[in-house]
Image 1: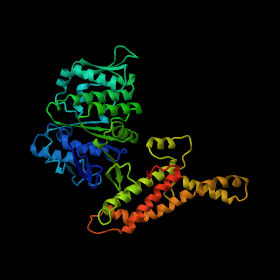
Image 2: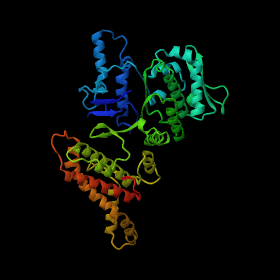
Image 3: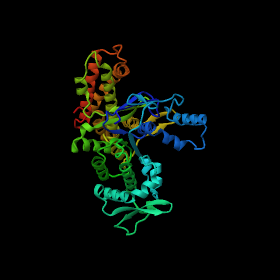
Image 4: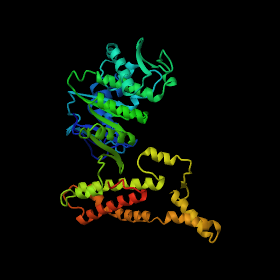
Length: 476
């Protein structure tokens, strides 16, 4: 199984980034644009480089020199975006990808783009486009027609509770088309104009199940190959119920695979973490990561749900692990600042869906871009202007009514304490956390006193956020 992926100057990753799999299943969360697709493409280059060349290089380019130059141009597209002339570095299990033998591996890769809804689902075309280990799609479909139908229909009924939905393969020379039938709406089924008759999410699920059926029957098990399944955002259109059912499908039918699951949905990430760690008691079989952007480069960060100031303090060993501790303090501080921003601006925390809901309420949004001074003005500036107008109208009935309202917001002692902590923390971010997170270990870049103070400020920050929202969910 795959144990480690290391990349540098690759797509969204400028700085060296490592994904420590240790042969386990992996669940990775990252916002759109954070670098998930870059990691997906890295795995594709390692295991399916020839497929990439086949898709992007004209087959008429046969001269060895021209072919080599064409391949170099294709690989150059994967260099870090801001330094495209610097060749990327990519390693698997501490070996350069160009020297690594992929023999004995069967790595199937399915992305959201592979399962987009279409009016016509040509199964042979679908298998040719996707990376699911089928060398001869025409032969596979002809020989496995009944197996494909039975397994997809079984998945639909038993895993997704779709009692009325079924599929059948129809040979419409020279194509194998998928006929989809909803027994609650019609009796004959359709293989054209599917998006006019069926929910997009259901079509996504059907195409995904066809591909997963191909993965199950691609012969890798019989060849005794190490089977890896990489899934990139394939649950995007599924509702919460179907996401739960999909997680059960992965556990029940693909347990023998090493699974690498990438998602931009924090709710799915949390759901999958809960399912595998608690419901299925498979915590030791999964590793969790988050991809974040930091100073223009993506970064792969192990997700440690219990990581907080107290835990960091307990694991601090003066003279031994200042670099690691400084990096963890920095990451924890950045996370808490992000949470504070959510609380102050939208009154919410946690999932992006909640924040979008807060922004999309019927309430007005207060924001202005000052073209003259080239400045962004937010609700804070708006309130300051209103208070200045109120104060200028001393003794008016309106001022008398509004003063108590303003006082409720501006006299919040908890928010003022938060500001003081942040001001001091910013200093330590510069003099302690940043140097330590880039330390080589050769020279002590911060004293124990500075680290201790940084940790104590983190503790105060966690408690103060808890006071703002009325419950402690950050220091637990």
